[in-house]
Image 1 (cartoon, rainbow, N blue to C red):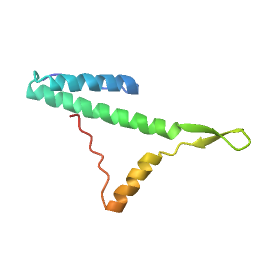
Image 2: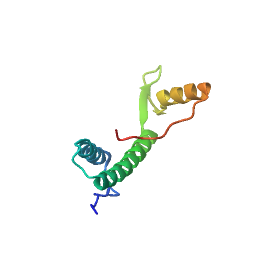
Image 3: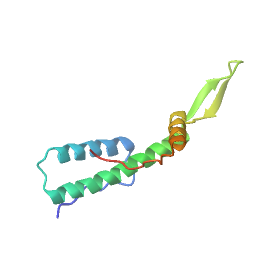
Image 4: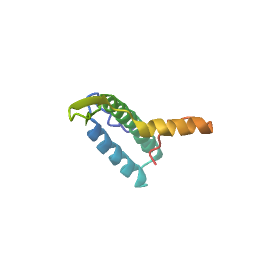
Length: 104
């Protein structure tokens, strides 16, 4: 059985994305056996989860520095307004959030 390269616990976002891109290219090549495709798909899904967790963590830490009327810098927590607007529109339409991620 083919062995998959497992994501390292300390692997950063960029290296996870690079590996994910490699996996997608390999899978799209059409030269892999079914079993190898499944192994790569599982590895890809783990990498997607790592990337999503890293992005969520980074989003929580982002702060936007703005200036008040007096010109003094103030620090304000980041508010993902685009995501909030999407969620509100989905709620209005009675839709549920779709957390499914596909490699292709």
